[in-house]
Length: 114
Length: 112
Image 1 (tube, rainbow over the protein chains, first blue to last red):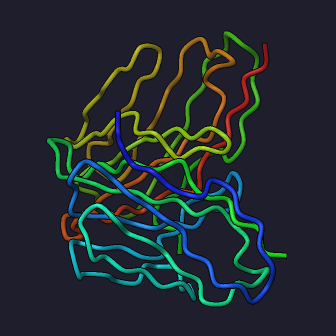
Image 2 (tube, helix red, strand yellow):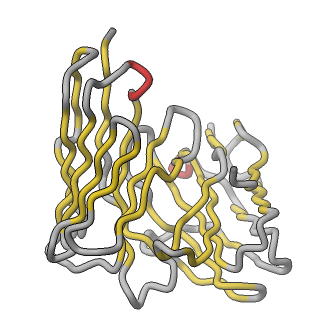
């Protein structure tokens, strides 16, 4: 059972507000990821981190930013939310197992910007 | 450009039927994973295949990795309503250091 947590699970917020989506894992994984997903659709990687103080932008351009000050914590911040940011945001972490890098996902944060 | 093409995109079947979902690419992957996602939740890893031609079974689910490690399939025997969900394949390349390329997913609905 993977131990990766995301808060809040649901967030409805007005345009222009600053928001931070929290993601924490207790497995000691070095690699962490943020994905954006519309309902029933594929996952788009927006940020990833290979370890503390390491962050990179993913394949999908995003106005959000991330930080990795502690191994277990990988928060995502939107300075000024817009309706186009409405989506589900999934956090994941991974380790290298016998089958390669296997990712463990949190339950997601469903963000609605009005 | 979609590196991993999944088909079909939607699948609606009756309980007890068999089905196969395909995941195809022109690229070679060092490993390929299948995830299942239920509404409102994150994806859950089902299986990882790493060797060309490899076949893995998980109860009624059979996963196969193509000989050339460019494609994979998921076969479900005697589908049940509990199998309903979004099935995602994801490939890892040798130089990706943990990053995965996801297919667009297959939404499976199994009717009682």
